[in-house]
Length: 183
Image (cartoon, rainbow, N blue to C red; front, side, top):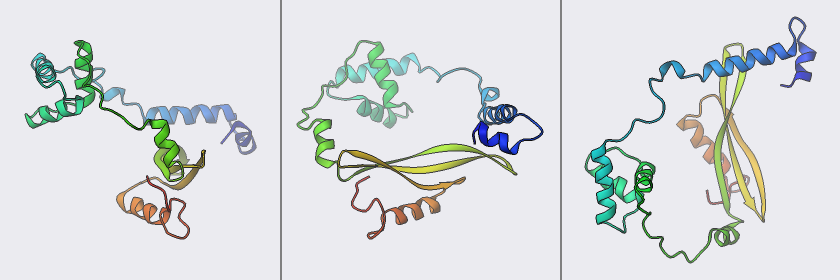
């Protein structure tokens, strides 16, 4: 809702005031500062960092994922991204790149008529019940070099049943716009 629309319906306060209140409501809803004790992720132990370096040096073909997986088998919870950061910080290059006979550009060109991607974005809506977050499921289809965006559905609660119904509706053989696409 823009300022022009707010001017048409507001008679007690200025439209700018309504927008200011809305921004404060949204900011307050997503303010988690009272729950934070420290900034960022907790640091990993020196022991774990040494173990990561040891794995990388002893297993030169192992990449970040493989090292993180091996550490997971030993009971450590660590992401492949953290492994990569540790290796980079210690001057250890990533595992050798494997031969890639198809470039990304060639792959996209060869599959452009069947590629689709999906994601959510959120919108904050003022309702009589207060500020509600609505989730918008959208798809991007890459067809013949163009990109089409389709809104699949909007809900305040994207649960499993809703997602299954969206999948059924979107892939219907005769009228689903994802029919023939590979997500």
